[in-house]
Amino acid sequence: MGKDAARRYLAKGREFAEVADRALSDQHYNGAGLAAVHAGISLGDAVLGSVAGLRSTEKDHGAILALLEQHVAAFTATRRRQLASLLRLKNTVEYDQHPLNAAEATAAVENARRLAAWAVEVCAPVSRS
Image (cartoon, rainbow, N blue to C red; front, side):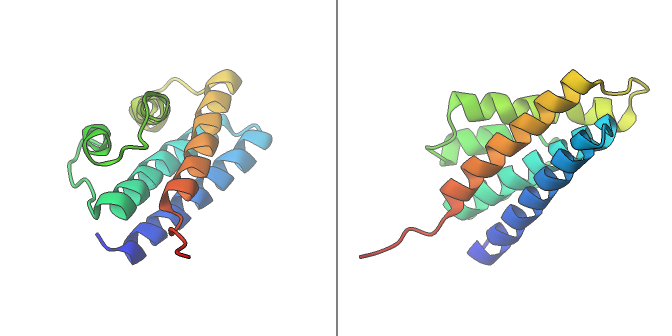
């Protein structure tokens, strides 16, 4: 993946995080959770693409966790927990009959916000003097 594609994934991830935040404010908890999940997926792709020029093509979105651990030094245990939490939520929010409650949606949106801030930092071009 090239830098341009990584920037596009970053933009998508940030947009999904913003949509998740608005949905949470409107008490649309399932929409907030789903947008937060998609934010995490896009932000993970952005970081992996920006740092290593890679993108996971696995059907299991969880495969990106190992790739980030292998190729991105800034992928700390905290970031791993945040992204893994969002990925675990994917099937629940998309396919399960269980609707998300306020606490679940709030946690997902907060993880998306934190990942978005981190991804912006990691993907920022290094300025040269």
